[in-house]
Image 1 (cartoon, one colour):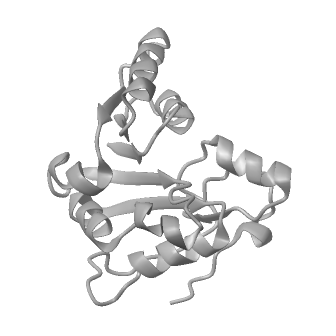
Image 2: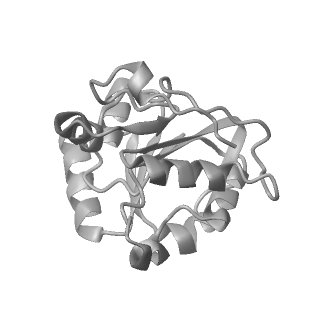
Image 3: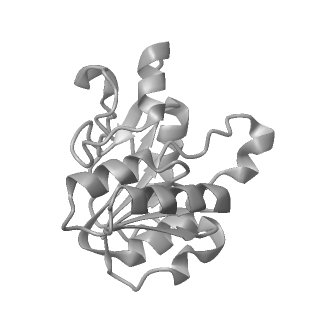
Amino acid sequence: MEVELGCADAEFSFARAAARPEALMVGLDIREPCLARNRVRAADEGLANLLFGYVNLNVDIDRVFEPASVDRFHLLFPDPWVKKSHQKRRVIEPALVASLAAQLRPGGELHVASDVFDVALEIMATVEDPSWRAWGSSTWRARGASGAATRSPRRAAASRRRCAASSGCGGCAMSEATCRLRQVI
């Protein structure tokens, strides 16, 4: 099972579900209208392996899945709140990451991508915090996890912004050297 956290229009989830019909794909979001549209579209496209659910990530995620039951979480382009006064709205925080780590099966992955480099570094610092980390050894790489694009990396490429990804979304036209994140912790 793969889970897209904060799926919105779920372009990524639709592409993954279509590419992997044998695997269950779950999209979670807090916006009911998005979820309703996504459910109708999934039914119209015959994607029985694609489900959607309402979840407030920072409140409910620890109750959604059984421990060690998720193969991969995808958190794509979270935390666009770059102003200091908006940082209280950030999704990535130690409690959320700890909940995700508990729900990942052994060898599972957390795929995170951001088009704001400083936000990507903050996410890496949270995930790599050695004081609580449950991941074991983690690797940040430029390519690999998904192969499905979202709108954010395409926008980043079009505006010539840097698109930073952990596990790599592969969704933009930037070179690997431009896109690569190096482990900084």
